[in-house]
Image 1 (tube, rainbow, N blue to C red):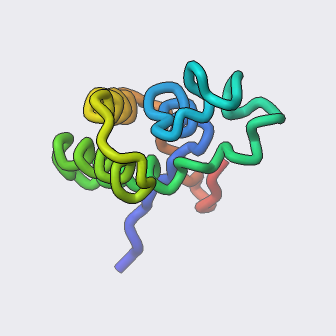
Image 2 (cartoon, helix red, strand yellow; image 1 turned 30 degrees about the vertical axis):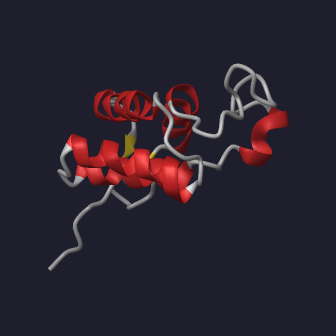
Length: 118
């Protein structure tokens, strides 16, 4: 039996979503210690800060995990895994991230006929 073809998340797209809509630590947010975009040279040292969580959320959605469950996952990551505690806007930011992931038609990269991702 052939292995199923599994797409990959386009990293720059998931980072655009995460850094624009989520950024639970507030590194690039208003009043944060840094400015600009995650892709700016001076910010590349921490650009991958949220990758694991955002990619996991995207894969959960792709597998059909309910929206509410993925939102709760992101809220829990922020509050407990990152140790940020509960913030009143955590739910809203997580909902925005999940919505953006669902709506991004270019988020997933598929392999070509030779199995290479470009």
